[in-house]
Image (cartoon, rainbow, N blue to C red; front, side, top):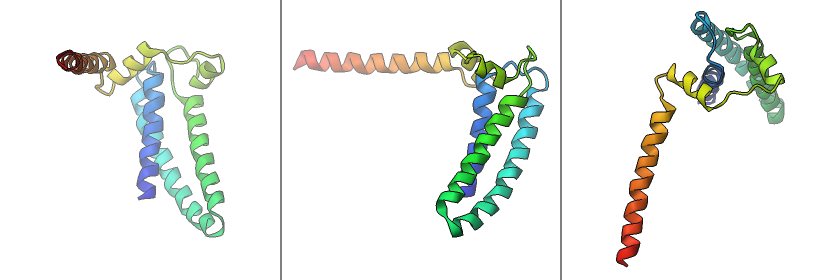
Length: 139
């Protein structure tokens, strides 16, 4: 079960970078799948060693897992292709963080329109708020 959660976490880290910095060009999708495959195999390999380390110390196993995920995030940020030939790591170092429009463009690649989702949620909240106000006026 823990291994499945780690593999899901690998996928989520990749999706987060891919959505936050979507200007990957034509090779971005290939990069995503190859990187996802390589890091999944790496985490499978590390999982075996962390099980052995947990026999000695549970904290050491946790430290190895955290170091592996930190290494993965650093490697993705340093190697992810971008249109402007500036790595994601350099963008983060210069303080060029993604804004809402960039994240929305990135999530559109996965078929999620954040603007539509937020608008639908706001309409639902407005309807619930209207019902609550109406009920308060009746009381």
